Length: 88
Image (cartoon, rainbow, N blue to C red; front, side):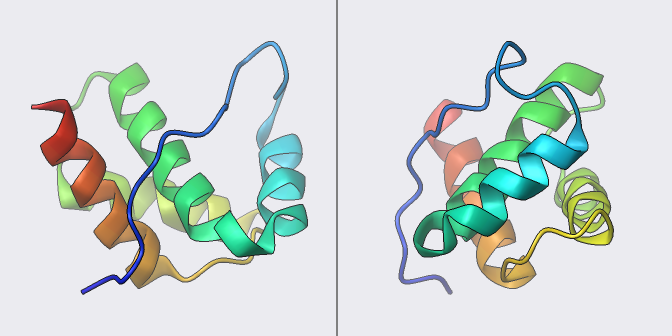
């Protein structure tokens, strides 16, 4: 269970043109890296149209981590779940 609280962050396609820029943002904002990662997963799930399942979020978080982003995957997933429940 996370001790953090989800809050939406700015992940605009006008600012972030690719995964590399999102990775750089995550890595430069260590204090909110988990929140940014959760927001990335939430936005990716919304955009791909396959729903907001835990498995979908895990896949997006894994993609982000594989690209070089440094964050706590368990925390990001818990924050993603907060975001989903807030959106309902």
